Image 1 (cartoon, rainbow, N blue to C red):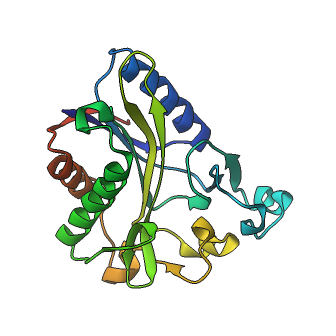
Image 2: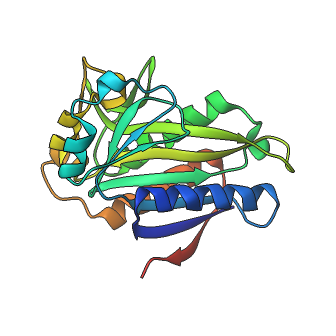
Length: 224
C-alpha cells in the first residue's frame, strides 16, 4: 500500500522539509509508504552533481525574475520546477522491493511511460540518460535520493520526478537542463496540442505507479 497526498502548490523548501520529516516517520514505522503530488513556484534546484556553468544567469537575475535557486541533496544536475509541472515525491521503503536502486529508477520511468500512454503519448527511455523522452525531447525528469534507514533495513527514497504537463518551457532556457545541451525539453500540452487536466494526469500517474510497484494506492488528505 502507499498513501497519495495531492498538495497543490507548495514552496520548494517547505516540500523538502516535509519529505525529510516523512522519511524519518517511515524509518521509525510511524508512517506508510507515500506519494506526494504537487506543483512548485518557479524554482531551480542544484543536485549533488550540478555544475555552476549550467546556470545561465546570475543569482541576482534569477532573484529579480522571482526564481528561487536551491542547492539540494538529490543526485543529478540542474533542473527547473514551476507551475504546470506535476512533481511527484515517492517516499518508499525499498526494503520491500529488494532494495535495488537501479531497478527503482527504471520502475519510476516505466510508471510514467504507462501514465503517458494512457493519455495518448508514447514516451520512451533514452539511455544513458534517466527520465522519459519523446524523440529527442525530455518530458519527465527524474532525480532521487536513497536515504539509508536507521531503524529499518534498506533505502527510503525521497525526491522523485517532474512531469511537464503545461509548463512554460521558456524557463528551461535559463539553465542547461540536467546538464544536457544537445537535447531539448517538451510538455504534454505541446505534444498533444491541447490542455490536459492536471487531476487526470495525477490519476494516471498514480495508476502507473500502483501497477509497476504492485501496491494499492490509498488517497490521503487533499490540499484545501
